[in-house]
Image (cartoon, rainbow, N blue to C red; front, side, top):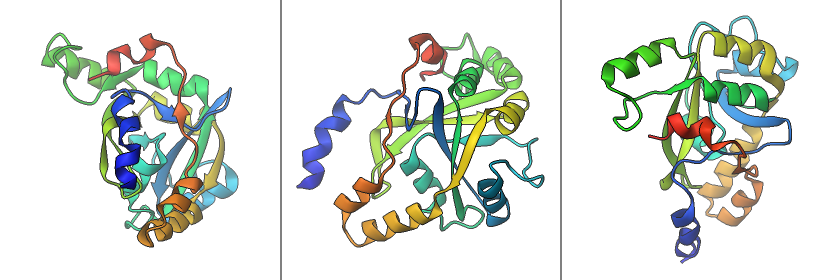
Length: 207
């Protein structure tokens, strides 16, 4: 009965919209790492030398999508969940310079043009189904932003304002969900509001 009562809000949510915890100058994204990386990152506010900046790193504004990806912090290599607060200027720079991670006929001239764009872009975007507290898919999508090359370097060296270990929050919410106490779990959810940005920032990223 409770599921039916919230269903209308899912129906009116736009399929492609960025929702995030944000302030006037920052936006919070989530990542999960093994403790050897996540622990030092949370303590110092910077990723340690063992963090591989040459690899693509994916950041996620959705806490529940991160929980789906890392299994509430139980998956191997993803035991430490981080809330990374970054500057909005950097976040929006990445979106402006991103390419969709898959070919979309309505947005790309042809597959060859998309592949060229993908090779050159320092960031890429994919839209995956948002998740509910049971980590089941919802009709609207959640942004995943992949950073590589220049974007990954800027992320690590320039954009980060602070890093918090939110693994205890993930553990607490997971226990409440398993106990069937969805109301209390929902109260602990980070507040993710529609992120204000010019329509043209996302125009080339809506599949």
